[in-house]
Picture (cartoon, rainbow, N blue to C red):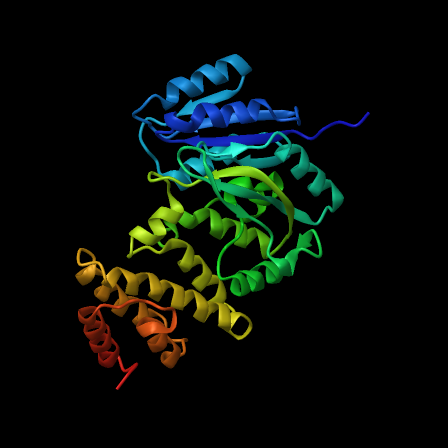
Length: 330
């Protein structure tokens, strides 16, 4: 008799009433049946908890509610502690999951005991559910199904971006026990999940399923990607890139510099926004002082026009003064 391992589907929620029913319906429709569903609501002030309770009562799922908002990372950690499954997936309350995502992920784990983490590709949708972008495996990774940390990190450099669809990730529960919880680090904040996946991949292989098994929603109230652009003081995922690259600069020096340039690019764009002007030039100085391992000539080219930034004259003058002050240009 082939006994299916238990999978814990962990769902953190916060003010998710607009999309939660659609998401929970997609969990009900999963073809893999040996699952436990755990919902942890982070002190929502809308109708989220009522919707979650209704589903949990109907399907005998587990519902927990925090009395105060403990933060996204702490809520993730709480869910992991509550999970009983051999595998744990943290699925997001505003996304939609295809019926076979759990089944296909378990199949990937069973193919190789060295695989510690599994992800899938997806389709980005807007708040209305309209598809506008497909997320596919980079060409450099299509020749196989299992990858090392080096494979993924190198591909991030070549592809100029992180292609991991983080809300699709499933992890062996034993790995959380070994490596610990999500780091509640102000430096990573909205990118704590990226940091966790990188940490896991440094010691375990990852399988990426080249199927679009998640409809990944981008909307105005969303966390990580929206915050990366709008909060110039905490470009979170870029900080993850930088930290993992600079810890082995001889091997990942190019990626370190690439991440640094991306961070500076965000800030340079912000300098063109009068509301962000004074804040951004201050942050540029702070970040450059903290990161000395970069090619100064290329940084100058980046800020001025290498990436076709349309820098306004007043921004140009301010940037040049900043770079002169710290010795990047004469």
